[in-house]
Figure 1 (cartoon, rainbow, N blue to C red):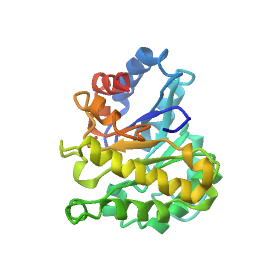
Figure 2 (cartoon, rainbow, N blue to C red):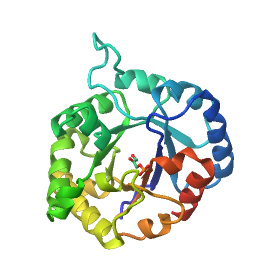
Figure 3 (cartoon, rainbow, N blue to C red):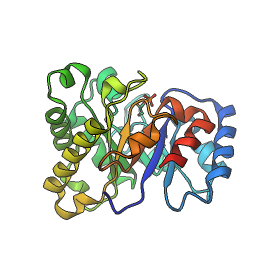
Figure 4 (tube, rainbow, N blue to C red):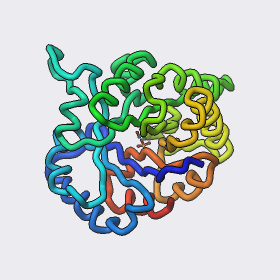
Length: 249
Ligand code: 13P
């Protein structure tokens, strides 16, 4: 198990309007005391980052972005740089989410380049990996995930704060979750890969699990080997459910 604090992060994806900032204010009030032991983060759409981070400054909840470009500025219409996201109040940035890999054709090399940009801006990357259903059915889950880890994590990450999130594509938004043994197998393989890539400092990064985490299954998910937190999609949109998941860790 990692020696650093576990992280429970909510990925709001393309959900949330300014009216929803209130629900996070309620959540923060509930978890102010718990936060020293467990890190709690919300990754809202970029449009809400500044308002959320200003309203909740000093309340223990951290904020993250869901993607960034690798460059710091330039002629990239519609994109956001890591520096802009840090300026808007982000501490973290999710990179290589399977939805970015699928809908924006991001490769491991793209993700590694974005990680470099995030580090330059002082953002902590949460790098996502995970097999799809056909890869799992073919018995290739560990092979696919370790290859993504190797390709998406540049050596510049050594000794820096970062997280890996294991998110099996078939478990995202589907209500299906892997068994405890399946999560343990992949998380152990990711830890082995981190030790190989970064030496002893590879013991530090929390390895989060993501994919249909709900209050009802969070305890079981968290009992798997090498699980250092969760990346929560749908259930993070309801402060009550997200709160129950934080409490289950
Ligand atoms: P769900 O929790 O909605 O399955 O989403 C998981 C996810 O993709 C988090 O990044």
